[in-house]
Image (cartoon, rainbow, N blue to C red; front, side):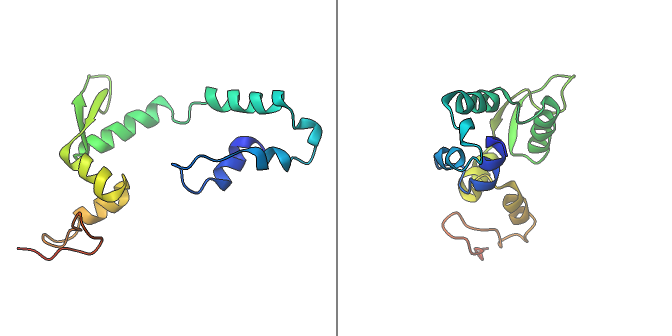
Length: 126
């Protein structure tokens, strides 16, 4: 198993810093538990492109079409090439921890039944 696979299986909370000592201590072949191995793994992770250019372009287009971002566009790109959060994008980030699925589900609720910023329960309003 590579370090990247171990991280994907063991990282529960992305905002928390994790030690990879457990991964290296559990290597079946402890002769691989060297500085060079660890450094090589980290350099490999650093060099990886987690998202392709097409992935990023499609995501920017989806965010723009759903009113979460705005920004400068060019004819050659689907979405904004330089983007910023719209007011609704800020609301998604602040009220839904950037969970676009939860935000979009909330948008489909009838008027007056959207989640209030202070509570997870719907706000019945006028």
